[in-house]
Every structure is written in C-alpha cells, then in structure tokens.
Image (tube, rainbow, N blue to C red; front, top):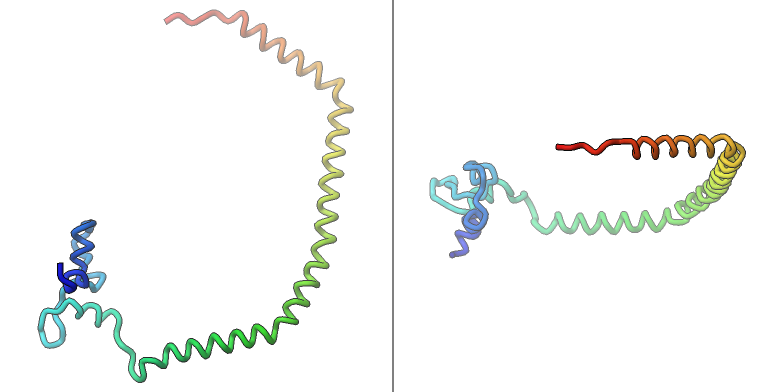
Length: 144
C-alpha cells in the first residue's frame, strides 16, 4: 500500500471495517476535493486541523514560557502550601484519634451487650436450631 492510502484511512478500514458508511465524511480523513477541485487525501486533514496565522513556533514558545512561570509560582508558594498542609494535618490527626477511639469504645459496648444478653439469645438460638432439625428430619422425600 502506498503512503497516500495510509493517510486516507483505507488501511484502517481494510483491517477493521467501520459499521457506519459515514466514517470518511465525519472524520475528515477520506479522499476529498481541495479548493481547486482536485482530489486529495489531505484536503480533509487541512480542513480539520487548520494552520494558525503567524509564526508557527510561537505556540510552543508560549507553552514553555507558561510552564516556566507556573513552576516559578509553585516554588514561590511552596512555603505557604507546606504551612497550610502542616496546619491541616495538625487539625485532622486529633480528629482521627478521637474517631478511632470512639469506634473501639462502640465495639466494646456491643461486646458487653452481647455478653449480658447471652442467657437470653443462646437458648432462643438453640430452640430455633432444634425446630429446624426436627422439620428437616420429618420432611418426606419428593418423588418425581
């Protein structure tokens, strides 16, 4: 296959056929006519990704300058961010300790309640188990 066919999207459609017949028209990767009416595989590409006006390297240069400014701002604000993080940690750690101790206390109270009510629920549980055992033994087998 030629490079023109690869750019036109024919290679991908031969491997994985599209489910829609509108793929070439909607993606802009099909063979289309340019302004002069000539058939070109790149006409859709140019219409989709239009070149900007002016110096082409300016966009990358501005991105680099912006990243450098953001990095400098982050370095300038690092002490403030670190101080706020430490204050937040100092506020959250005691709350976490109180929360964990409250959970431990609630588990202990639940264990005490279960132990105190054991004389009630253990015989009830044994009675329910005995009834289930008797029902299972008296059940007749189903004949088909």
